[in-house]
Image (cartoon, rainbow, N blue to C red):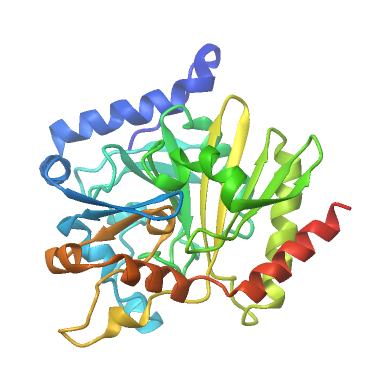
Length: 330
């Protein structure tokens, strides 16, 4: 494991630059990672145009392990945690980021640059108590990477070990189409000079955006969101959600996708009707990952619409969140 700290004179971009170079080094020294990144050059892409936005689908058979992961509590309990440092492959190197996290190359990439940012200690996957570091990590590597979080029951294949992921910036449609969607597909709830909050209501799935240069404002807004979402979620569980955050020109942009369920009904269908699509943050961001060629080739716009609507919260829940967040900033 590599233990490194940035030169104080170049700290602003050091983590981003060093993370990129680590990936290049690992491609030379780790055959599995090198093979899977080469395979990534051969993935197939389909694009679906909706009313003012795009959804992409990536055929990526190497992601079958994640998409089909059995995440029930008994299975998790009886397997070794693949994110604990003691269980990492001998070929894997990483960067020690602050006292708590490791930056690791992801050997099963979706993006041309794909990282896993995992906690050094084996603690459960939860954004509560880790959101501030989520923002800090996105600032540290934001020159090249977007950071995302999958809830323990919303796409995480390691719900027992706290981690984020990071991928090449502006690959997901929700990122690069954001500005064009603001005027047509969103409702501005807060714009007070410190933070802008928008609710996107006509995008197949509901999502919320927070934009601010002020970390404190984001912490307060996110706490308000979580507390409100808890009220309409099962007790004693983290509310179902996916998060995508980017940092550029001194401003964070956080996208929040509140969820109603982990996987759509078609995921559990019989052989003829099954669609092995397990939406996580990347999928909610408009890049659907399909590990099976038959699903990739046959899926329709109507089926994409059905998947998103099934795993997203209802309009009533979304309106409740909008009202609660709006009230707190009055």
